[in-house]
Image (cartoon, rainbow, N blue to C red; front, side, top):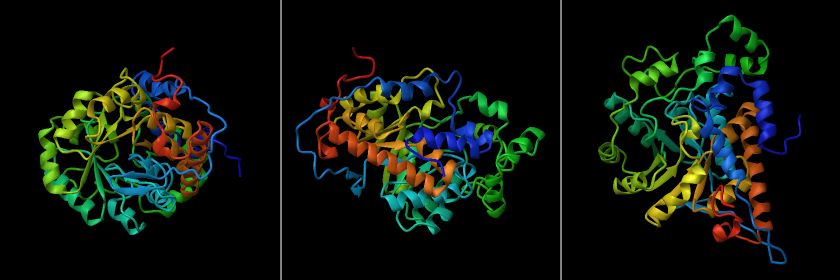
Amino acid sequence: MPIITCIDDLQRLAKRRVPRMFYDYADSGSWTESTYRANQDDFSALKLRQRVMVDISQRSLRSTLLGRSYRMPVALAPIGLAGMQYPDGEIHAARAAETFGVPFTLSTMSICSIEDVAANTTQPFWFQLYMMRDRDYIARLIKRAEAARCSALVLTADLQILGQRHKDVRNGLTVPPRLTLENLIDLATKWHWCLGMLRTRRRTFGNIAGHVKEASNLDSLSAWTAAQFDPSLSWDDVAWIKARWGGKLIIKGIMEPEDAGAAIDAGADAIIVSNHGGRQLDGAPSSIRALPAIVAAVGHRTEVYMDGGIRSGQDVLKAIALGAKAVFIGRAFLYGLGAMGEKGVTTCLDLIHRELDITLALCGLRNIRQVSEKVLWSERPGDP
C-alpha cells in the first residue's frame, strides 16, 4: 500500500487505476484550461501569518451549514460520472462523507441514482439539479429528491450549454466506454476497475435512464447534454423550482456580485462562488479571486460557499479567511475515490482535516470561527 501524505499522492494513484477517458474527464478544464490552472495557482499566491506563544489547545473545526453542525466547513461537491471513477462511486463517496461528518452532494449526472444513494446511507444528503427542457422530468426529479430525504437542493446555474473540454473530445467520452482498440488497450491495464464494473449493474446515468423522454443517446454525454440542458434558464425559473421543492435551496455558479444579489432576491438560502472547476468559461477569474467582492456585496444576507482549486486544509483556511462559510471539494475527493474507493475518500477528508487543524494552530487560533482576513499576509491573490 503506497504512503499517502497529500492529495497529489491520491491523484497519482487514481491516474494509474482509472481508465484514461474518465480520469481525463475529471482532471481537465475547458479550452486552454487557464481558469482551471488559476483556481489552484491563486491559492498558492495567498500567504499566511504565523503566530507564536499563544494557547492553541482545545481546537475546533466544527461548523454550521444551513442550520446543521458538521465536523469541518467542507462539503463534497456534485460530480457527474463519479460512478465511472470507481464502481458504485457515488455510494462509496456518500458513505465516506456521512461517516466523516460532512455534506455529500449527488449530481443529476451521477451513475448511482438518488434512490441508490438513499438506500445505502442513513443521513440526509444534498442533491444537485440541472435544468433540462423536459420540465415534467425535472418536477419528478425534485419529488424523487424529496422522497429520498435530501436536505438541500443545489441548482447549478452555469451549465446551460457545455464548455468544450478538448480531452473529452479526443477521448470520445462515452458512458460506458466504447470498446475501441485504443480503449481496450487502456482497460487491459485497469483490471481492478474492470472487475468492479463487471460486478455492478450501475453503468449509466442512474437519475436519467428510464426517466427521460427520448433519452436513447445516453452514451454521448456532450451530445445528450447539448440536446437536453435548457439554455433559456433564468431567474424566473427559480420560483418554479422553489414552489416544487420547498426546502433549502443553494445556487451554484455565482461569479459576480450582481448575480449573487439576484440569487438572494430569488430566494437562495446559500450561494456557491464557482466557475465549475474551470470547465465552463475559460478565461474567467479563479473562484478565490472572485470571492471577496461577492462576500462584500451580500454581507450576511445569505451563506456564501466556494469551490475550485481546493487541494489542502490550508486552501480551506484561506477561503474561510476571505469570507467563505464553507468550501466544496471536487477533484480532491474524486482522486481518492478513483484510487481506493470509499477508503480513498475518507483518506482525502482526513488529510484536509489534519492540514486545516494544524494550519489553524500555527496561525495562532483555536476555533475555525475565529478565522478572518487577519490570518493572511496578503489579502488577495496577486497583492504585493
